[in-house]
Length: 265
Length: 263
Image (cartoon, each protein chain N blue to C red):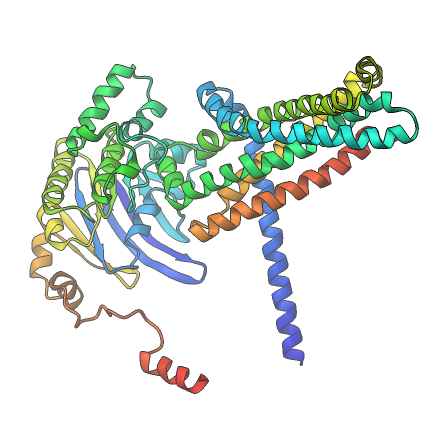
C-alpha cells in the first residue's frame, strides 16, 4: 500500500531523513517511534504529499507521489485520513460540523444520513454527547478524539495518526488504541501511528519502526523489539538516559557556553 | 576591507534575491487566486457567508465615516465656493469628490483596515493551527474552498461599500450645506444632476472600487497565506497587509485617475 525507496528529505542544507526504505502492506498497523525531532511526523507529511522528498521514491496505492500533479494528488489524498498532532479542528465550526466537513465536501449524502454517520463516528470515540460544542470548549484529549473521528469520517483505506495518545487519560487512551486496532482489522485499513507511547504501541501494532539520526534504526514486530539487543532500541524501549540517543541537543557544551559568558562579561 | 565589501555585496545580493522571490511568490499567488475566482460562484452559500463577514460587518464603519466625510466636504466646499459666489455648485463639488475619489479610496482604506485584517488573521491562524494542511489532507484545495469565496466577497462588497459611502457622504454634504447653512436645495440637486456624468464619473468610481477590492482582498489573503505559522508571524502579516493594501490602493488610484481623467 505504501513504500519508501531510498527517500531523502531535508530543510535547506539540514538533512532530516536519509535513505528511508520500508513498505507497509494493506491491513497493517505500523507504529513509528523515535526521539523528539527524529523526523517521525515528516514521514507522515511525506506520505500525504505535504512536503516533497529531495531524493528517492514514495509510492502510495501503486502511485509514485513525485510524478503526480496537484489534481491527482488531491484525488489520492481522498484515500487518506490524517490526525494532526494538535488536532487541527476548524475553530469556527462545531464538533458535529467538523466531522461532517469531509462528508459534505466529498459526498452528496442527504442531511439525515450525514447526521447519522457523524454521530456514529463521534460515538466511536466516545464523544457523541458533545456534538454541539465548539472546539474551544473541549479539552486537548477530547479535541484529539474529535479529530480522529473526522479523520475516519470517509472510511479512508489509509489512516495516519500523529501522536494519537498524547494528552489522553488512561481510559481514553486504551479505548482509542483499541479503536485503532479494531478499525485496522475490520476495515483492512493501513494505519501508521507516530507515537512515543511504547507500551500501547507494543500492544496494538503489527510492526514497529524506530527512527533515529534521520534513519531507520530498527524495524520488526513488537516481540522482536522487546527481545532486541540493539542498544538504540533498548534505550528507547527501556527509557534510560544512558545510550546512543543523547538527551541533550547536539551543539556546544554547557561548560563552553558558560565560559564564553564569563569572558564576554 | 575587501572582505567586508564582499560580505556586504553578498548580503545585498541575498536580500535582493529574497525580495524578488517573495514578489514572484506573490505574483503566482495572485494569478492562482484570480484564476480560481469562478469556483466561489459554484458555492453560493460560502460566498454569501463571506459577503456577510467582509461586507455587512464593514457597514457601520463605512457609513459613519462616509457621513463625516460628507459633513466636512459640505463645510469646506461651502467656504471655498462662497468666496467666488458659486455656493449653488456645492452639490456638484460634494458629489464629484465622493463619487470619483473619496468614496472608492476612503472606503478601500477602511475596508483594508476592517475586513482585510480579519481575512489575514483568519487565514494566518488557520495555517498556524494546521487547519489548511488538514483541508489539503482531505483532498480539498484550500485555495478554492477557503480563499476563493473570501476573494470574491471582497470584489463584490468593495464597490457596494464605496457606493454606500458616497451616498451617505452626499447626504452629509446636503445636511451641512442645505439644512444647516442654507444653500438652495434645488440648486444643490440640479447642479449635481447636470454636472455628474453617470458613465464617466460614476462608472470610473465603480471601476476604481472594483480594482481596490481586488487589491485589498488579494493582498489580505496573500499575507495570511504566506504568513509564518506562529503568533508573531500572523501579527506581522496582519500589519503588513494593511500597509501594503493602503499604499497599493493609493498608488493605483493615482494611475487610474491619470488613465481615466487624463487628456
